[in-house]
Length: 343
Image (cartoon, one colour):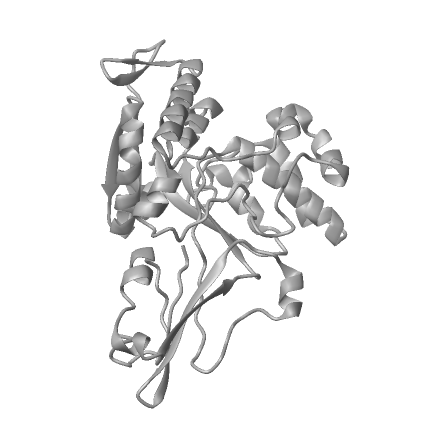
């Protein structure tokens, strides 16, 4: 469409296409321009969402084992052309993200729910395992297996079994978009090495939505957009009541009184400082309850002759780790644009 000069702009959601498809003459001639710059006004957390309503995902050691088995670095190189950046926060790049250990007002808010959250919330900053080379992959798979054994599983005849029931550990990745299949399939061999029987299923949109409404899934790819002024939408994302409401965005099924309390404090915060402290507390709790994150880069487009580079005043709003990728251009005598990636 852009080559035919029949659109002014479009959204490109493929890392592969962004890296390989824009090699036509109009790009070489600078009639279509590509540009990158930080995004500063919104954030999107993209994750593998485990349905913890199901018993096989309820042990946090199991979910952590999945995280150790996820070779993000190699997937990023092979599938995403090194365009993704892994994050360790639901609100990465903003003042709402938890960093280091809790202190000040944030610690005060967390102390009120100490008995309802994992002890690591107070003692250990959350970090993701790093893979990317054979030694790291082997070490992380060993750690994943150690965690699974601690959770009550063992491998027999190359199959992970529950030591009490003898039941094999079987999971299904579910998607309505074929593009996600290659992501799940890349993850599958690592899980197979742990003895986890893994299937990947792509269904039509109607079936996918029906299965989500009835919570009939194991693992899906999910995303939660967030602004710098969060509020009631958090109840839908992570509130206990939403966990059982068909069709709610609480895909994971989180039901935790500490999270409910932090959401209330965010919604009813009387000033910005209290809101930020409560958000960081919420972020820290969520990180230790759900794992296996990955995120993509958010991109946008600009018209020919203009620029969307952030102004100094924009920079004061948010220091972000996300990136805009924009394409803009003039084909013939009209303005045309492309782009972006919202991953």
